Length: 170
Image (tube, rainbow, N blue to C red):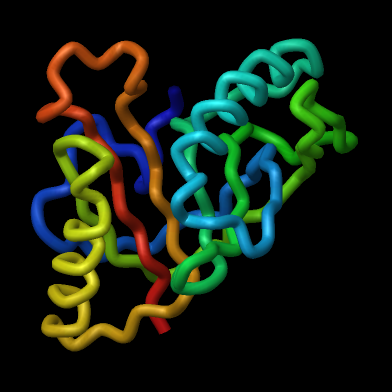
């Protein structure tokens, strides 16, 4: 995996400000997806995307992630995929019926932190992180990334499972 501000080797400590580069994603775009169904979506789509990208010659350069375009309520608008070194030449369908396409993740100023622990704690981690970003005088936008740096299928200790939280700043 290539090193980038999104995916440093060590977890972020507290709120870290960065200038994030644009990322090319191979992703499935979904509108109004129920939050309660997120684990099933990601558990199904991520393995399919990784396997399919090998077949189309795309080079993965980061962990699986979700790029959100609005603050979730009961549903979310997001792109679920992986960063690749170059935009996909063409879209393709997964066996599950989802369509993978080139999706840009914009460049710009971001705040980032790392959550260590189970995915069950992500809601609380996001709340604390967004509060800390605002308390530091920054204005978060509704565009944010949740990067699943640790592969949960390989995790032996869920307390060390790492998810990076990245929010774009106004």
